[in-house]
Amino acid sequence: MENEHKVMDDIVEVGRRIYMNGFVAANDGNISVRVGDDEIITTPTGVSKGFLTPDMLVKVNMDGQRISGNLKPSSEIKMHIEVYKQRSDVRAVVHAHPITATGFAVAGIPLEKCVLPEVVLSLGSIPIAKYGTPSTMELPEAINEFLPTCDAVLLANHGALTVGVDVFSAYYKMETLEHFAKISLVARELGGERLLTYEDVDKLMEVRRKLNITGKNRGCMECSKSD
Ligand SMILES: [Zn+2]
Image (cartoon, rainbow, N blue to C red; front, side):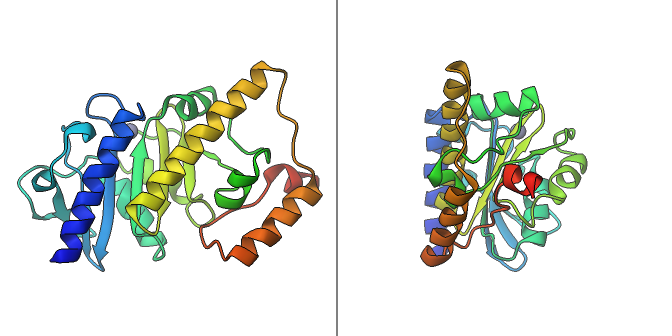
């Protein structure tokens, strides 16, 4: 199918970008796109995402069983399937270990503060899901509670997960997340972030509605804490 060829090319391109940006090392990370009710195209396990070719990709069903392709599907496919089960609006999932965002996840510091308008508009506050052993059901269980309200989640002692309506949208959220983490780190080195005011955040939420931004966004945790 022409559409699936395009999807595969896009996955290969996003794989190259997450590798070239240093969002993964060696064979880390995985990418998937839901192409049907019971069909997901995923990256294989044990291959660097920087050197993918379309023929390496694998198609699985919603139980994670391989439908086509020669290689073994990603060992994290269970985590991707959990996303697709909960979120019919999501068509793509990217999992990577970008250094700064993962540093926050390792330090146990969520990226919940409202400091950058772009991030408030697109992702809102970014929580940390508790640690789960990779490739087991612990990871899907750990992200479960955040999926209804988040398009980006940090994974404790592991990395990050972003979702979107297509693979580029999920990938761009990973870029935004890592960029936000880097800026937050620099601001902390310089004495700490100055937060947007509640009024600023309210105005941004209004802009979000006007722009019809449909991604999930759980708003500001700082503001809601103070309610
Ligand atoms: Zn990982």
